[in-house]
Length: 148
Image 1 (cartoon, rainbow, N blue to C red):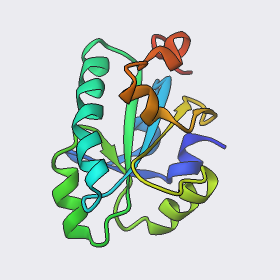
Image 2: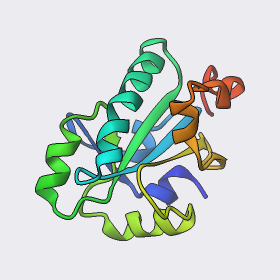
Image 3: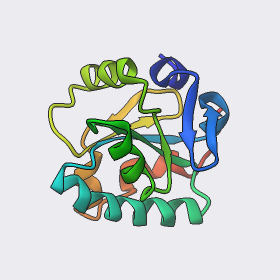
Image 4: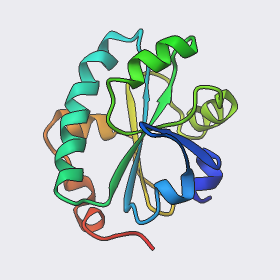
């Protein structure tokens, strides 16, 4: 299943809506970040992930994060997403969020699922890799190259 099939045709960026295929073209690793504004562990993990994200992207790595919100309302989503430097699944795409949670068996948040550029699972436990400082060794052979 392709990334577009998983996420739908449109994502939210800081500049507005973007086509999923365009936004993720060439990304060797795509991280699905399941999180929410109301979740204290998420609020602690988000800045750590943001620092890693900025370092990887700043180094020209073919990496992207997509925020998949478990927020209860769009205002909370908007407030929390304002603190994040990456893409997001639009808040209104609740059916896609539910399908992703089911597909990757996300039972708690924060959760970070790492996919390759074709949508295949690298790991469902990206959070541990980030917290243990083992990031990005999980994808060292993939992240330096662009996906086709």
